[in-house]
Image (cartoon, rainbow, N blue to C red):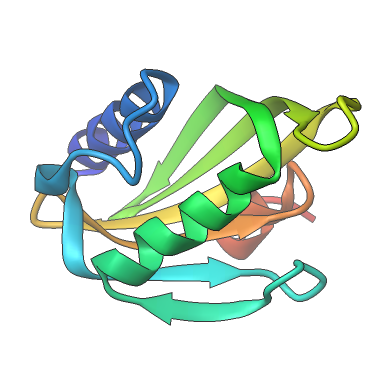
Length: 132
């Protein structure tokens, strides 16, 4: 049910807001896929909870502050697109950045089995076939 999938994704973002990384184990499938887009510093797919956690830890190493605020969730079957506003402070330079991006998460049996993020705020919706 799409609403159950949305609630699972909401719970993940709530956990991240509390600093839980990579997130509550009951929400993450042990074989989760983490997909970085082309153009990311480390593009490609990583598999497994350990690789997912390592990818998130690598991201956070460069930032003294990284905050994400979901702006909205759109569910189609077991996939949930999330538009996110982020704010971050670079660890080395202190430079502050903010912007919007999106992610597409796949939920099965109450667990996230795939997390794919995109540079643009409409990209996850486009991947669902809901944006031009």
